[in-house]
Length: 102
Image 1 (cartoon, rainbow, N blue to C red):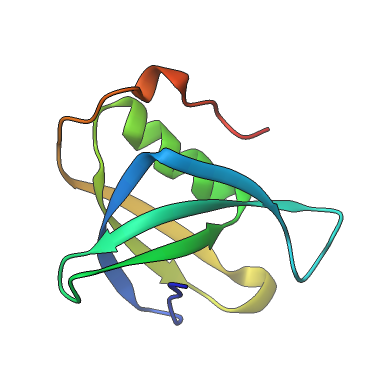
Image 2 (cartoon, rainbow, N blue to C red):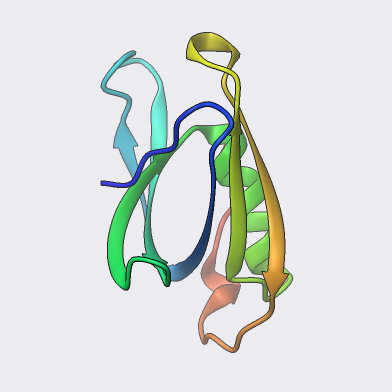
């Protein structure tokens, strides 16, 4: 699994065909979204569980055909926020089936 520490950022390729809702291990009444990501610096694939807010930002970029994204974590605990910035665009099929998390 991939994770970021406060102030850390990573550049990841996101697989738009590998998104699933999963239970939040810290609060079972909330859901998170699991993405398959590829880290080119480590030459490895990971799973990343994102909050609903972070998942919305990632999926919004995917709808714009941006799959290589910089993810930056700001804050800790309940104050954690993620910024999502496109690095470049890619060509991946089947992005029309993506849905925004509610």
